[in-house]
Length: 157
Ligand SMILES: Nc1ncnc2c1ncn2[C@@H]1O[C@H](COP(=O)(O)OP(=O)(O)O)[C@@H](O)[C@H]1O
Ligand SMILES: [Mg+2]
Image 1: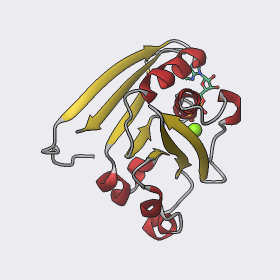
Image 2: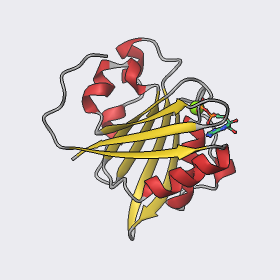
Image 3: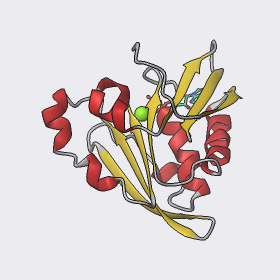
């Protein structure tokens, strides 16, 4: 991935975690930084905690309990209704790992999801050029040995 650096101002936040529970906590904190509309790519190897992080975000938005948030690997898209600072938030959690090619992706109607109060989180979104172009930022989760993780959030202003 060697795309030209975006001209827009970029905000970067870094977190560390040593357990799944701690990653949920990070997700809760993160929710406060994510003013809709946002389309964020969730990047990280299988099992690093992308879905786990969404549990915390969903919880903070009163959109779902952590155990109600499951991986959309097969269903592709999960939708939750929440609120942030008194405003309704539509939380969309996608996993496009199994999708092959832009044509298949189009059936998801990603453009229609990105309404003014939407927070769209896409696991494996980096696979698709169209998603990389639309993304307002990304969350990268990297293993730091054992259960330790580094979570780096980059938001375009
Ligand atoms: N620091 C950590 N952060 C997130 N998950 C962790 C961590 N340590 C261990 N785990 C475990 O790793 C798994 C991550 O799964 P999941 O969130 O579904 O990953 P992904 O969506 O990235 O494939 C969970 O079983 C979780 O309990
Ligand atoms: Mg996942």
